[in-house]
Length: 540
Image (cartoon, rainbow, N blue to C red):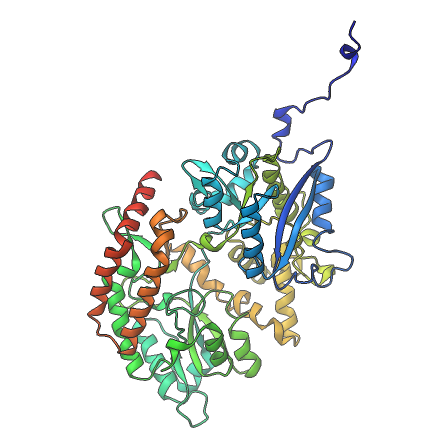
């Protein structure tokens, strides 16, 4: 008999057993990533975590010990995933076709890799290997999270970011200035405009000089941090997102007539001196400096704005009582918080077409969720350990999904504990936040923002109100950039911003808005709108 017949072949794993979300590879498998460091992880470490580095830490140990996945990095650079160092490294890597097993890329690069057939369709692995909890995280806000990286029915990447929309835009306002001028908090747009005027003309800082303004405005007008999206929403205008037109079709909000109304109001405010005359040349950092110098009293922004840029104002003036309020409306219809789909700037994890274990990426996501948020997990070791000063050690992991709306849920846990006098029994993220609030009350001024967000009068009380009353205007387009969008949207956005700024400054008549709309459709907007609506139809 042939001796080879006596050799026992290596046992193949039972595929049904492998589909257990937490099944461990035996023997262990190898997986390579590349990575960009942010400000917290610069230097390849995290504060207060002695003995741990990005390449040797509790998370990599956990993935090895619990899943049999040994993770290494082909290279690591500083400056973030959007930084020049990462983008240059990625460009060279893609050109040389020398890819790691898992490739973190932005959506445009993901589409390029997909078109070049260099990455795996992850849909069958997602269907078979993701835990029920993970599936829930990625679908709570609808199909957009996974849909954004699905091309022709194939799931070509998965992001760690499960919250595709923000928790709302709010009005951040100097409540101490309100009290000084004898004003009430605004309930209507008319109230808000009156407050802006008073903050400009009423000398709220008491220095006897006419040097304060109502609104914080940057040269980008309605784009991201310190933008005016919340003000536009008060007139039911939603620039920079896609909305339904009443007939089931999607239209770009920047082209709708409600935007023209807001531009006219802003032009009148600019003429009256209620907006910085030099806003058109000021970026975020310039306006943040004006806020820090206590020259502005109203800012439209996210829940986290007390961390930046408002902390600078409080640091320079402990009397600065920035308080969050809900958006106000110009009529009897409620203002809805605009929520642009946030995935376009995020990183997606693609899997090299040559990697033998595409399902291993899904298992990493499963395990991260379980260790931080699951019944058998240990939040205080794997997420924000108290022993390490509540440092976010979750950043040691190459993937880091978290529950959508987790911040509002933490606020609700805090509210319940305050109501029932059980703050000492809080666990998880709510406990970390409460420690930060207590630190502020005990004199640590650097923790001021936590109280403004999560305290008894924190802005999230309005976030809860938004949720309970469905006061969000979700961006309806959640797909990858369409072909014409990738080619022309940058130029269209630049044109939009230039004409809007000119109208506000009085350098162009309000009628130029109508010309802008015509030009927008002529030089690519019509094709983009058609492509977006074809995508929208395919979602039905």
